[in-house]
Image 1 (cartoon, one colour):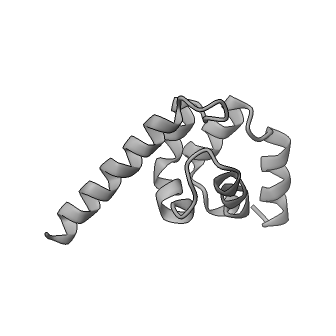
Image 2 (cartoon, one colour):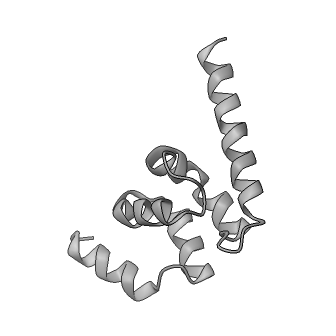
Image 3 (tube, helix red, strand yellow):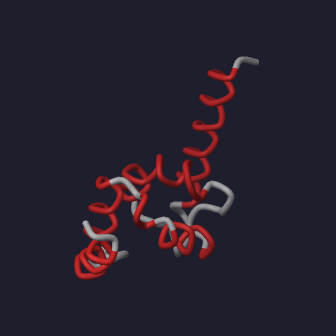
Length: 93
């Protein structure tokens, strides 16, 4: 199997896991899942989607998250604009 096929399968499986997790009570909104999927794969894929581990991981990697993901997290109420500004200021952004 080529690395492209392996990556495609891994991405499809991750998407499937994220989709299935939407039925859980603590599931993340679909807009956040789509906006943050790349960030999840890059930084937090060792944690189960929707778990407290992935939430801690995303917070720990907050300065690396894409703008699209951060905007979706703010819109969904998972993080406040104030927190985003505070973290950006602490990083000199």
